[in-house]
Image (cartoon, rainbow, N blue to C red):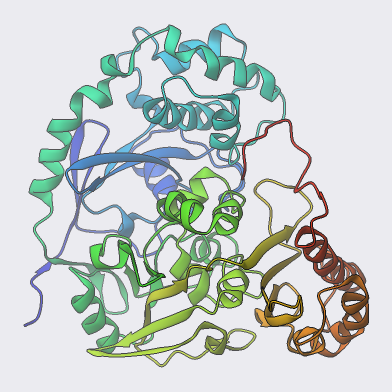
Length: 493
């Protein structure tokens, strides 16, 4: 039975309900706020989700709770906001009276100079304060990974963050006090129907559920599927690409579940990085540590593991470590599903094993058992919020005599797709896990990879880094005390 269709988007902006019967598929939240609503506190800096000047909070229902997350309005599309609560910096002190505690702390501790980046910092700190009223320095710095300030200096902003709770309690905060009311209003908006706004190909579509998504893509096989828009957003803001019709899947609840059965974690294609972080950190710590380095907090609140796989980027962070674990991928078209090894999904640059109208539904990740050595190492120019130059993932099982029983090595940034180092694996399998074996296998890298030179790294650097990551993995698994990284924190990730 076809889903009922509603021809309007419904959401809450600060304190008022909004109903939109007209919105282009590529209309960003930032443009709508500034141009249509005259809310100019939200700034445009990079237009690609890096600088955080456009940060707003988006509240969504998660079960019986209301969860607020900082997001980049510059790459967040209007079609993703149905049944959400959008909070901008203007809502913190709406009557130009007493400043909000976050704002007052920024004033008193000199956390602002030119002020351009300040609203974004305020909103990121606001989101952190609601989650953790007395955050550690580690939590503060992690929350601000996605915010760039060029003139104030981060120490002043960190001092502001430490002091926020001395100005007021979370229980006195408007968003805390409004939660029951906002939850009820959002629940009334959510009528379980499909949303379609626009005409012809210039439409945005929000499926009612996963079965409706399958029906939509069967009817519109050339539609652009938008999950977190951390990549698709740049197609619009930087490449001026037409994404119509656009199908927004962030609200499809069936795609936002995680479960574990018989040692295999199933991650729905709509699960965001931050939603997966706690679970992965507990079950597969190396993956949790990697997730903490993907983008900034805003990107991790929006971006999805399924989207990172589906777009097929050769420098996507999650495919290589998932391939090394032997993960499998479920694809769906209509009512038909097929499950394939994840490594077989990537065919060539820009080409994946996905039929028209087919979509990624879930990825299935085996949890490494006892005795398995597993590690992931990302190389980038900056540690935080940077695109990968190369990334290596290593899975090793040793036999009782210390020889290599099984090894899987996968890299990103070394080929046109995420790719296993098959020749290197063959050179190691069955051999003693020793330095001599490693050095004998190193020349096999030339058979597996011919990396490119680009702005992130030269081909020579990528090849040397990839070889050295294998050497590092050997040292880590041979009892050598190799520091994971230099940090003033002892906290992992």
